Amino acid sequence: MPTISPKALTDFSAALLEAVKVSPNEATRCAASLVDSNMRGYDSHGVMRIPFYVQMIEAGEIDLSSQIEIVKESPTSLVANANWGIGQSAGFWLADKLIQKAQQNGMAIGTMYRAGHIGRLGEYCELAAANNLVSQVMVNTHGAICRMAPPGGKSPRLGTNPIAFGVPHAETPLILDFSTSATAEGKVRVNKIAKKPCPEGWLVDCEGRPTTDPESLYADPCGSILPFGGTQMYKGFGLGVMVDIFSGALSGGLCSREKAETQKGNCVFMMMINPENFGGAEHFAAEVNQLINFIRDCPTAEGVSQIMLPGDPERLAFQRKQQEGIFLDGENWAKLTELATSLGVSVPDVAA
Image (cartoon, rainbow, N blue to C red; front, side):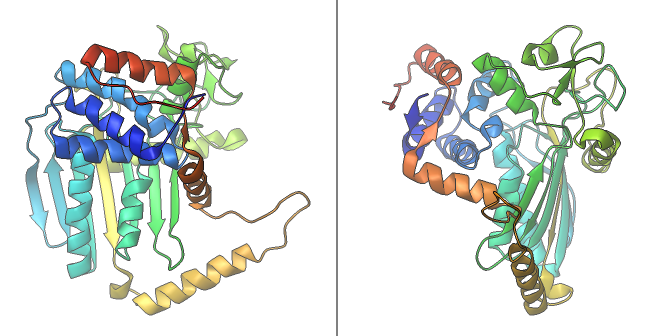
């Protein structure tokens, strides 16, 4: 497995994007976002996405000349049409606007449609928490990519429809970020590229039979990712339905449907809340702090070294990779180096 430093991987990723005419500022921000996902253990939302972004740019599905259009706006709300621009640029634009509104007016809700893939949702919650705001973010795929079958179903009816929550805290924010499916589609794709089986409980084939073959998700007819929840998958699927409605119908975009009407991308729902305008910032901070301490002080079962809270696994992964570098499997690294060769971009040195 090749190992590469975060800076080298960020510079390399930005160079790949600039080679297909992404502006330097957008390339740098997108690359930093992708590498940050790798750093926090979300390889599904990391640099493995770059070849697919490049394909979409070359196919015209991502429009590098687009401008974000404000459709509706009030002191506490915003609706925007991203016009198929780079997803991370659109996502951070929306987050920045809502942070300003929430700081000034106590809260803000924003929606966006026709955005490219906006990346790891927890990153926007981390940004909100750094500004002392509580946040919630969710997205769907305009109904263009259905991956998750309902419990007992044989074909997909929803996207993986992720949702994230963020809470500020003096030491480290609480960030909960997960797909309403048993796993993110990107994790299946990582295994597909790496030619590795998926864990049991992730997938069913086109007949609804359990499988560990990642190729089944991309076959014709295709398989599906199961909803999260184990024996109570209806809860995961039900949450996925609500995410589809909040992201698609409420935003002015589209919900899942039989035939895709747009290219791949995200409809977005994003909410920011200023605790000062509700129970008060001091009360909020004190209650969150005592809750965290109460949970962490729980006696641990045999073999358990510590109690983990939302955001802990990502923070620990980040700290480890700052010291050790980022590990990429050989097949996914090969995809990046092949792309670099085709674009005339120099490949950085990596450690074995």
